[in-house]
Length: 305
Image 1 (tube, one colour):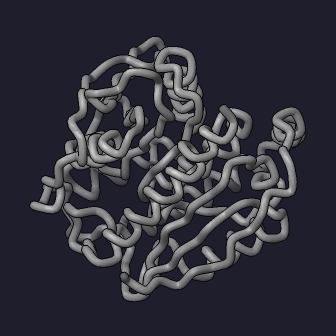
Image 2: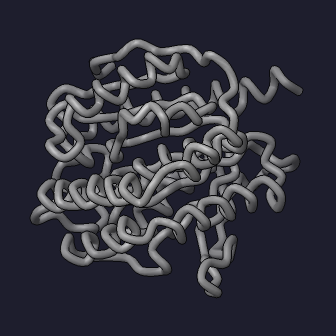
């Protein structure tokens, strides 16, 4: 088994109040919003440096088939700015009753075949999966185009938040999922964390693969869902120092979390189409992800029913 650095796991102190979180947001000023955008712009710059010379071309590692047969389709799950938003919806072919759902959030490349493949693999583990599209149907094939896509969301995050809200509503009301988790990589990892802060009462788990973090306890206080964070020790975009700051804030707030830092792994080490792909670390992270999701979305659901 690949040896990663494991940072201790916290415990949940209690349910945070959505009303308190909303009040905190309402009481903020334009300065805090601009500070968030500045942090986002810095993250875009960091991702641009990390992905220099990278491509979105799939490798053989993307050809791994789901463990069980799945059914997938492209369908609309939201309407943002008077435009329908289409996602990749997939579930086990032998599904009878509604299953727990995972909302998958793409990297800065967009909702491409690599992301759809990962969604299919998750569905093959026994989940309803909705891979969302936060880029309005656009996918990038160059770091320059990907940078602009990501920057567009940083400068105007409200449509993406609305998109995520409707995705949660879709898997809850339409698909009937008893529990819901989020999972994202890079840009999507940051939005997986965002979702747990924005929708604390609706989500039951959040997985962050090397996404933008915060140590702002006013924002993190809202989180109810257990958090799994996956990071690379050699990631210059999401530094180990920022991971430790994030972990310390979660610990002070007594949240439920697990954080793993993989020695020798760079940013996007789990992306099989990238130059930084690290098969050993990626395989270990995938197994930890499945165990985490199973525990919080399937086992916990069984305990409550």
